[in-house]
Length: 119
Image 1 (tube, rainbow, N blue to C red):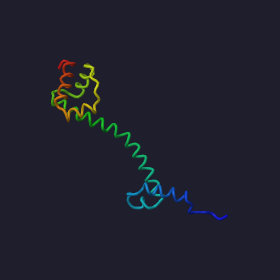
Image 2: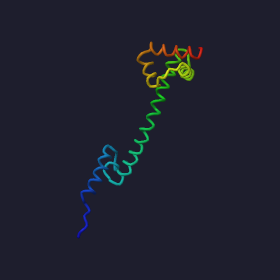
Image 3: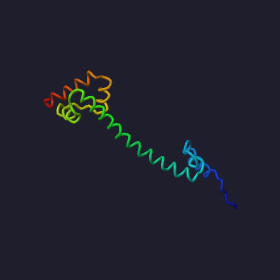
Image 4: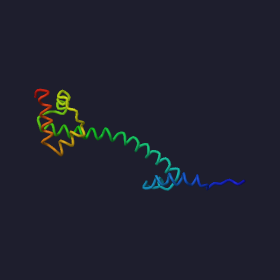
């Protein structure tokens, strides 16, 4: 029996990798060997990036809160301490949105935190 070098499984596997490499530059998009390495690295990076994104967003919310709270004459850490002492349980994402979209409600939350820490 003769050997088959262009079988359907072989072609399907290669097509899948080359399809994932679409948009890559140079040999990495057309050469299977180079494309395979590039795709594996890209998939690894995207997995890590999805994990990093969560921390990046939290950092963004904290930066926004710090800026908004400093306008009210308080630091971020004292603000969060005041919320904890007052028993207010609102996550940083919601607080950040509140500071942007509803400054009046945010000011009320800041005043609650101020009362709790006696500032």
